[in-house]
Length: 241
Image (cartoon, rainbow, N blue to C red; front, side):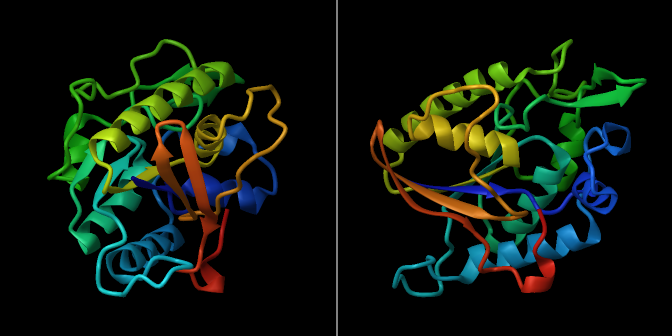
């Protein structure tokens, strides 16, 4: 199986933090939408996935890069997947375990307060044909009473890695796209390649908005990294982080 890890397009928070030149939690939206530029990025990404040849290979144009798509339940990922699903006509499944580190939370008076996230109805309004797990209800999907720690996110990345290994064993010919988030993608790649966990992390896998990393599952615990953070689908004026 080939796995394509995709970071979401530019979110409102990405733009706010860039403009402020600092990560100020008082500026953040708990579950931000895409910016106008982010929507343009998502369309470039979707067009590339629907029609482009595999980067760095001689595969012919005309086939979709992906056969299946899974996506985080956070709004910025859902809106990115919406563009891909529309242009590439892909089946979409929402995985509630590939969200960004921390989960959904608001920052009030320097206190982080968990929030439930998008409801089942809200997600299906954007992805009407998507398959959602029972854990996503009309009360949202983030059911924790605390904000996820970095160590807990690492443990979640380990569980997702096992889930992906099982998926690869069941679907060896699949080309699976996974739309997720910058920090979680770093944790997931590190787990898949066997890197040890330490805080702070000694190395990150950088992903621009809509950057693509391709991993191939050779054996359950043997991974080939074909490329990381491919952004050839974006014109230079659309590059953001």
